[in-house]
Amino acid sequence: MKTSAPPKHSKIVILDFGSQYTQVIARRIRELQVYSEVVSFDLPAAEIKNLHPNGIILSGGPASVYDKGAPQIDPEIFSLGIPVLGICYGLMQMAHHLGGRVVFTGRREYGAGMLHITNGSQLFDGLGNQLDVWNSHGDEVTALPKGFLAAGRTESSDFAAVEDRQRKLYGLQFHPEVAHTPRGKEILQNFVYHICHCAMDWTMGSFIEEACERVRRQVGDEKVVLGLSGGVDSSVTAALLHKAIGDQLTCIFVNNGLLRAREEEIVQRVFGENFHVRLKYVDATERFLTALKGVTDPEQKRKVIGNEFIAVFQHATEELLAQDRQNNARKLAAASPSGGGHGHYKFLAQGTLYPDVIESVSIGGNPAAVIKSHHNVGGLPEKMHFELVEPVRQLFKDEVRQVGLQLGLPKEIVYRQPFPGPGLAVRILGEVTPERLSILREADTIVQSEMKASDWYYRVWQSFAVLLPVRSVGVMGDQRTYDNTIVLRIVESQDGMTADWVRLPYELLARISSRISNEVKGVNRVCFDISSKPPSTIEWE
Image 1 (cartoon, helix red, strand yellow):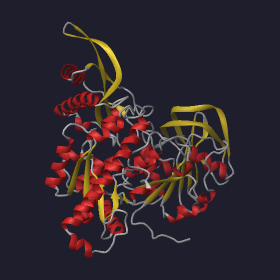
Image 2 (tube, one colour):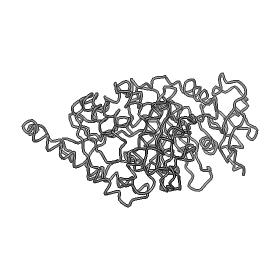
Image 3 (cartoon, rainbow, N blue to C red):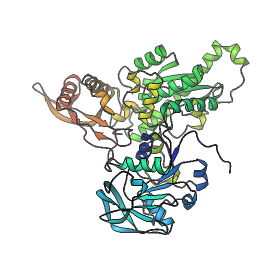
Image 4 (cartoon, rainbow, N blue to C red):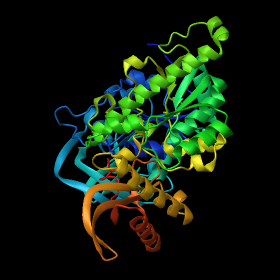
């Protein structure tokens, strides 16, 4: 087997068994300035070794190790000589494959608990004798494999923390990665720094340098085209590619009619006038709205929008190529063929982020359910003949913002709140019509302006309006109304993987509600969404 060169920085590999917290583990490790990478649970030991990790973490998961078809690890991983930390299901895997005993207790331990540390494990250095922890499991280790010792116990388990110091194998029945284990980050820190000997070498400065190198190596002298939306992801991708390859990049901005107010003006000003990026603007509003007529299913909306975008984008790329040939015929005639299906536009850049990749795909067949499809994940239809360039695919949203700042993007772009690829279509429940778009766009503009005026806009993850297919009776003046309902969705989050609703001042909520009811024709009721993620998603569709 060919062995790859050792990486430039420390690395923790996380095997994903389908836990809703896998992404949180990855974030916690990166907060320690150590690179983390999520891989499928069934990656063979030889391939993991070839990744040159300093340490391995086994995530939790919803299955029982004895279930038929339950995800199972390659047990050779425990013989690589690389430190391993098993969390919850990861601990059960460790015990199961190394000769211990795991049983289903018949009771699910979920919620807060107290860990009593029993043998001074290096995992708990500097943390005292007792820790508040968060449990979420139904199985329990009742007998340890040979060589293991108990490192901590809870009221319901004698083996809540275990270790084999000689082989550097560690297991926790609780979840150190969640906020409900207050000192969990310190446990991970002990594992990453003191047991795995990782260096704090994951910085956005080093990422930019490596990403530019990687892009130049992949692209060579070819041209790259990017669908620019004006959101943080595509904007940072554009700035990063512009730094790496300059005029080899061309951006296409498609107005699908589902954008926020004045979106097209902002994008053209920032990238065309300020950054001097080559930019082609296409207004395809009518085409998208026609295609969406009668469509009410959320996934179908995303598919329709995705398919239309591909068609519009493809046509725009062909127009660019024709223009290039016309304007620079002699130069292009002398150039070597690119080998791509679109002549010199061989590569398509996308602002795919790590949470998109993890949330959209069941990695290696793991049992985590696909929550929703993302418009920029999973490759492209074969007919497009592009090769993908995804320079920020390794990053979480807050890391992307840091990269944007370092690249000199303005605050209004870098700290923009996330906006879905399908735009306002997935914030209109039911059919998307010009009238309903107008109502939502006006309401959303009020939400944005009031959030900015009150200095709350940059303090939250997202704040937006949702239009429901619900009409209710109201009174305006002396007249009865029967109009639409707007929902306010305002959440705080670190990376979009988990979120909580924001406790906005009542005065601000009242002002937003009053303005929407009075200024937006067709709305007579405003509600406030107080759901967290999980169990809800941030967007409504």
